[in-house]
Length: 245
Ligand code: ADP
Image (cartoon, rainbow, N blue to C red; front, side, top):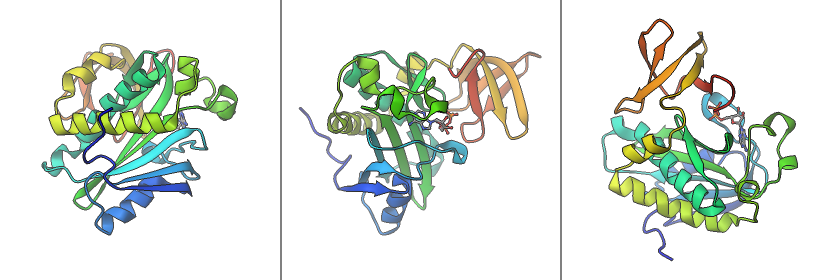
């Protein structure tokens, strides 16, 4: 099997950390190279977007990668879209189940979240955190997540190895970032596009129809008055009209 060239060129493996993104940020400050990875068996203070809690006990792949791509910093936010495409591909290959993307960068299987992605900036580097539920069973998730979360093993009905997911994921990620050609694939697999959505942020919420993606990754939603509004990934929660997706 092909192995990645730069993604995972150096890997720090830890039994437990607060957050792999925090560890990777510190390493980036000390000069971690492009592709340096922190992997932890469990995170005690995993985070999602908007400071939401990310549940990350043993049984998942919890990693953060330091990226120093040769591109304008303005394009950095698109790295999380490249990551979503790569994670989706790896999740489908490893589980055998159809995986889809929920804008901006959650990966879902049968409408439940199997992976979350968190992109942060640290000076001239980007820190990309990726969490994938790999071999948890339903009872391993806290009550409030049980209807909304799934692991690759649950989805595929077979045991999936964390190690194999890590390898497939790093390879897929490297390929997408090097080729910088993921927009069509993103649109093909994104369940949010061309569907009714409910958008909420700190100021309130509105319903509409997700029309398209702008080149910078913003979701263009036509509201019920027919006005097209640009929705940016950092600020909002998106839900399907009748549920999570
Ligand atoms: P959202 O899915 O609402 O856009 P985020 O991308 O910020 O939010 O992810 C954080 C959310 O993901 C949490 O609020 C929680 O609902 C959910 N979550 C936390 N841990 C897990 C997990 N291990 N698997 C699936 N979903 C999770």
